Amino acid sequence: MTEPVAGEPTGRYLVLLEDDAVDAGARELNRVAGIRALSTRDVGPDHTGPLIMPELGVAVVSADGAQLHALAGAAAGAGPISIVEPERVVYALEPAAPLVEEPPRTADETTFTWGLQAVGASTSAATGEGIRIAVLDTGLDLQHPDLAGRTLVSRSFIQGEEVQDGHGHGTHCIGTSCGPRQVTDGPGYGVAYRAEIYAGKVLSNRGSGADGGILAGIDWAITNGCAVVSMSLGAPTRPGQPFSQIYERVATRALASGTLIVAAAGNDSSRSDGLIAPLSHPANCPSILAVGAIDVHVAMADFSCGTVDHGCGVDLVGPGVDVHSAWPMPQRTRRISGTSMATPHVAGVAGLVAQATGARAYELWARLVQTAKRLPLPSTDVGSGLVQAP
Amino acid sequence: MDQADNPVSVVVSVADDHLDSFAEVVTDLRRAGLRVDDVLATVGMVTGTIAADSVEALDAVPGVAEVECQHAHRLPPPESDVQ
Image 1: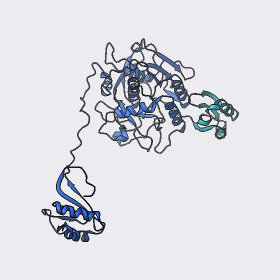
Image 2 (image 1 turned 120 degrees about the horizontal axis):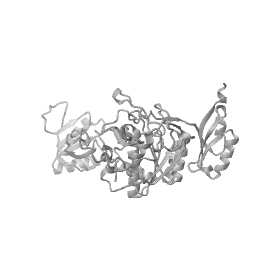
Image 3 (image 1 turned 45 degrees about the horizontal axis):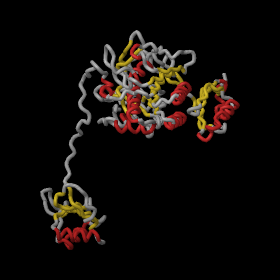
């Protein structure tokens, strides 16, 4: 026997013949083992005896112990018989079963947002305590009642503007990553609800900013020992456009310092029109963890950017459609959509994992992708899948 | 107006093997025409503005790894459903 392979045997054997040696092989089967195999060209599908498939150069034969010994001897020596191994039973693969439980058509958000439920934060024992999470965005409503009493460090990198959020986007993102898991009226919406909040304002109240302020915010976050930097920001890219060498270098230096940078994949796709746009800058940098968005049905968000260029891939997805979180007072909360909303879910879970395991940087990245819930969706859209709390 | 008169915003990264002499690199960048906005020592970056026709001079400064123009980032307005 050559190369025995595990598996349920049929009692028959496959005989691999040398290339272009079908006729010689048929003669050899007869000579060494008395097996007269017929070609599939000469017999119908009902034939049950020894068979040779000339296109494949393979014979399928029944053999008793003596015949098998003879065939094995022929395979071991020179000649047209190359390999003999047991034929194995194979089964038609079942149609892919859903790997994810069918979600409810409408999530029950009485106690927790659908996002907290989807990432498992609603049942996680981890809190983010002792972990510093930086959110680089439009700042924060510093008077927001849902964040009262929290450890908060803030800084504005926008000239002439205070940290106070005049847009809302930053407050929403901080609400998801670090907000409360329990509130008096409405669902809990915060993942790492005891993490220390580092609110860096790198986008103005009009929602605009430049790389200089963002890099200054990253520098500040690393200097302050933040384990996670969440960046729900980006600039669209074109297919084939190279990623920023500068941000890549910053991201690797951040990782070397124990800081993981998480960034939004971008909202430039229009999947219902067949358009999948490439990842935004700087999420397209290999060493920045890029986050796409799914909805409550675990379907891709129509707008979520995808993997277009090799090396610039989506790494994980998070809940990013119809996300309920904090908004500057007096509105208090609001529902919006975007990969901007998916990103702080991942950042918050990263904070939980950092607390629960002590992992930082590349190890934290590895644990996030290792434990992500695999989804029956293209890896180019979802990377390793849906982030999961420990 | 000549394009060269338009200052551009840039980010300059300092190479790993020059992080020990970071301050000297910054000094050399200023000499090469960079108006420094921020010196980011932790990540080893310098941000600033420079006349468009002088950007290439930054590349020649010893210890400089990369020079890139800054991107603008813009969120949709607060009332937008998708952000």
